Image (cartoon, rainbow, N blue to C red):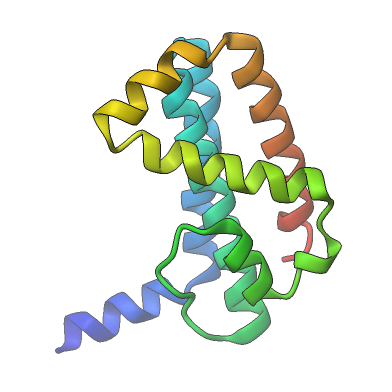
Length: 137
């Protein structure tokens, strides 16, 4: 029982979420350099998810819902109205990439479609929105 309380406290620790998000963003960049484009997109999704969850904790003092849906998290956090259509589209694409990385048939299709330029552009967009969210913390 004590372990569960410790986990909940850790989940509510904003700095922990930020540190995880920073690591995911760094990993995304490394994956692009290593031509692992789908994994780079997966890490972009994870970085945004975790930085939004950090902001959610700051704004609500509650543990965020266990979801990977970035649009839902942005809505729950209260920032959705501040996001452009392009950012919402990016969030939806990142969610598709995240789930595709977990299923062989979807993964194979995306691996063929990705280019280094596309991955780098998506990473750059992710980094920009990531910084914007982090600045709200």
